[in-house]
Image 1 (cartoon, helix red, strand yellow):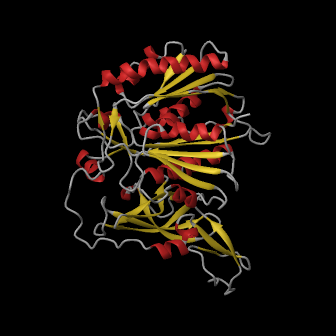
Image 2 (cartoon, rainbow, N blue to C red):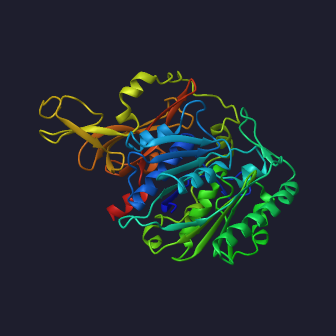
Image 3 (cartoon, rainbow, N blue to C red):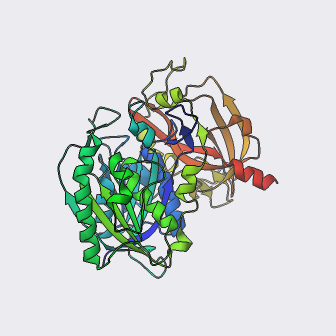
Length: 465
C-alpha cells in the first residue's frame, strides 16, 4: 500500500511587475527579502495547518528548488528550524532541476511520511519569454498513510517515468537565468513521450481517461498545446501563474485540487528531461481540507506594483547606487546556533511561576525574579498588535524605508520586528500583524533569516468596523 496526499497549500508573493510595460501587472514576483526557503516555510505552514498533521520523529522533510540560496549547505535544515520540527524528522534537499519535485513526490508516496516543500525564484533574461511567462512561488504537499484521524484527500493510483536525453533547456551554475533551444524541437521530443506515458499510466490503472490532466513543462510550445497533446483528458490544466520551475508540478496539482470533487481522478504529467506521471483519485476528505484561498484567486489578485527597474535591482540584474551607509556585518555561526530556537523557531520563554512571557527567551523572569523556571513560548503562529513603530529612511536596505514595530502578542509577550512588505501610510498603533519568515539581509554570502511582522490590513478594517 502506498501513501496518499494528506494536505496541500500554495504560496504566491504579493508583488507584481509589468515586464512588457503594457500596463498589466502580470508577473508574480518575490520581494527582495524572499527566496525559495522563505516561500517554502509559508507554504508548509499553511499545508500543515489545514490538514492537522504534525511531522514526527522518523518522518522526512524534502526541500525542492532550482534556485537554492546555498550550495554545500543544506537549505532544508533552515525550513526545518523555522517550523520547529522534531529533531528526529530528517531534512534534505532535492535541488537543481525542474524534475526534482516529481522525484521527491514519488519517493514520498512509496516511503515514510514526508512533507515536500518546494519553491522557486524564476529569473529570466530581461525581455525574455522566461521573464514574462514565469512566476515566483512556493507550494507544499503533506504525504503519508491514511488514518481515521487524518484520511488522505487523494489516493495514489500509479505512475510511470520515462527518461530521454536531449538539449531543450539548460542553465550554467554561475548564471541567474537559463537558455532554451528552439521550442519546436523540444515539443517534437516531448509530445510522443507524453502520449506514451499517459497511455501506460491509464492502462495500468484500468482507466479509459482521467477527469483532470495537469501538464507542466518548461517548454512553452508544449504548455501552449497542452489541450491538444493530452487528448484523452476531460480537462487539461496547469498552474494559473505561468511556469514556476521546480515547484510547478505541485502548484499545478494544487490548482486541480482546488476544483476537483470527491471521486474524481487527476493525472499529473511533468515533462522535464523525460516524463513523470502520477495518477490520483480524490476522496470525501478533500472538500474540508482545501487550501483557504484557491491559487487561481491568489494569482488573479492585483497585488502591489513594483517598478521594473526596482525589480531588476532586486534580482541583481541592475547595479544601482547602494545606500550610503555601512553595510551590515556577516552573521556569525556560533550565536545563531546558540539562539536557534528564537532566531528560527521564534520561541520565547514563559515563567512557570508567574506566566510572564519573555521575547527573546530569558533565564531570569523580569516580572517576579524567578530563575530557570521557564517553558517554551512559541509565537510564530500568533497574531499581535502594534504598540509603536518607526519609519527609518536612512537605514541600509535594498528597498527603503525600513519600518520597525513593537508588537504585543495575544497571550503575552512583546518584541521588536522589521515590517515585511511595509505600507507606512497604513500603519497605526493598535493595528493587527502576523509573522512571516524572511531575510533581514545578506552579507558575505550568508543570509540572515529571521521573522518579520506583516500588516494585516484587511483584518484591521474588519475589526475596527
